Amino acid sequence: MKEILGIFLEDTPNRLAQLRTSREKGDTATFTRAAHSVKGSSGNVGANELHAVAEKIETHAKHSGLVETDALIAEIEAAFARVEVELRKLVA
Image: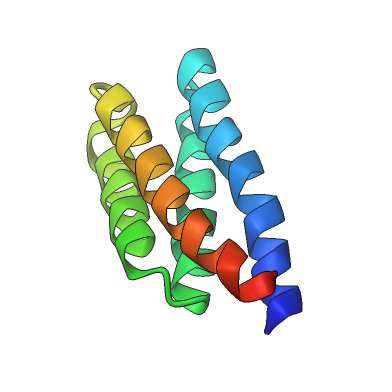
């Protein structure tokens, strides 16, 4: 379990960076894939709040594109920051 959580904690910041980068480039496909990836991995480790936010972002991108996603990106980053604190306690 520690190995899985470690991978999640290492990979998720990269996916969040992909959200920002793809948003800046106007790349909806990459943005949606990054949100989908976070949704899946957070669901796998039981990070329910992060999963819900990632699902909201993925759905928004599929239906509305990248308009008004800055607040959503901030929301997912905050959700990850909260779960990261708790998961790091488990892998320490």
